[in-house]
Length: 157
Length: 156
Image (tube, rainbow over all chains, first blue to last red; front, top):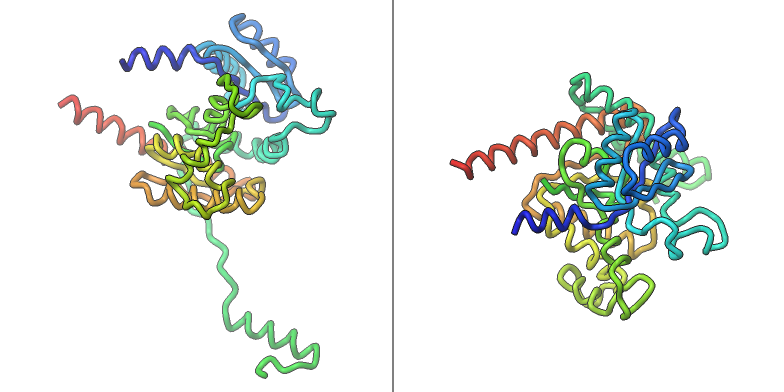
């Protein structure tokens, strides 16, 4: 039963996106992916690749790609298949596809995440960062008094 | 171990969880099942009238159907979750009131579930980002250790 489930999971068709964080080029990554397996469909994009195929094949391709530069290659599953008219820009009259803004937002901090991954490999431990304190109530009241006195009004009316 | 992630479609969390040997429970998996399953009921996204009914498990009937519809998709993920990582204050989680309420409900339900939860803030600087990776790694290592101990206890 468990084996059947695992087999069904391996056989399901999925799409994963591979995102690269600076220095690497999507074209180089695509060439490397083509060398690894012919059982998957690869689409080159501005942020990296989209790999579609059976789960086991896709996972294998991504595992091999990660070996090229483990700190700068990231991946996640994608809901819609590539070129799906519900998401594809060609059918939507241009503009970014839904979800790109979120990806762009995360792309900006990927270089810092890469540095964190290097620290993980070096065996560093997390340091608790100081949490910024809220403004003191007395100081807050003082600010209110200052601001209201500027306008010629008393705060204690 | 199956780890629920919040933001539910996060690339960073999804990647880190998978990289460190666990299975990320992300929204994309559920969306894939929805959009790839052939259905005649309600193309193109196959949202059926049954979905808001599933959402009733989490939210009352007078709650906007958007919240219940979203919860219907997140429901299988919460059900399977054995651990969770929540990152607060991600800028891109800004959305309409339906999204905001759903997000609050998701976090509440996950916290109420009796599973280990790691809560972090979205990184705003390089040091925050490095710390986030280290904390996620530490949390996932602990989970791995727990899982191994559990497996060993079952064997004995």
